Image (cartoon, rainbow, N blue to C red):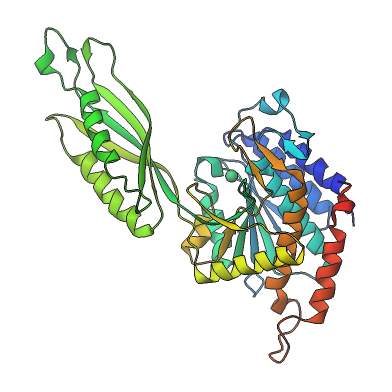
Length: 409
Ligand SMILES: [Zn+2]
């Protein structure tokens, strides 16, 4: 089994050193190709779904796509926030047990875990397991293209694991806020502010009033926040501003607060604060919340006990940050996020992962998958105890194969 850690680090180094900003279709495709090459070498079946407006998607699986069993789905995005040229400036490096480089945590380390887990499971279950994976291309801008593919794959899945980075504390992410990203465009009328002041309609003034009202929708007790991150407007100091724009976001925990807040936002936008002014609101991106259902709690429990069996503990956390994990969650599919390597500093030049967790997280994920797919590894027998001896042998073999030493760390 050619899963020496060397190979895993090689894969991580190669894809970190390949720039793949969301808008860089060629770069994203290059990351996809490298992962495909690794999977194909590991006898994992793959196929590419071409996209016109974003990088291509890579589907991989240990079973036929039309398998009658709901499979476990592994999710990950190949795009990063960093511009072309970033990797040449600060290439992949290892220092003091940590790996650094653009996208190493968010989420190329997680892609390596998914690829590695697929390869390890494939080697031990040549006849197949109900496990599929999807490598997507535009999460960092809200997955406008990937969302449909994630939705299709998720609706068929029994359980979804999203390999976003683990929290700096080591925890996996069991719940996340939803977010709506919006663009507000206000129009007024230009006028000389000295000689024709009363003929002007100040879009800047209107925008400021709207912003004050929008920000008042924040309710920290409910977990509802409004952040206006960008404002622009006006022409010159002595011109009544004819236009102004804001980009802002709503974040929320509970779905009912999304709809309620959006109604209030629409009211504020439509209100003619100054006669003759107009305002238009556009939703430019949206993430759904990850909700921890009872089934999702059971998946976390399986993950936690798998970690314990391996002698590690990660814990669970809620995060205000958004991810694609909200998509399967919308359909009630139990979803665990943040199962990638433990790391921090995402979207900054300090981004890192704890290299040893690349292995411990891969092991934990693989063992969890074995536990969850147990009923589908052999014919169902109601009299059988919950853990079959055969599975224990499989699990042990798998874990042996992915011991740290195998990786030379
Ligand atoms: Zn990410």
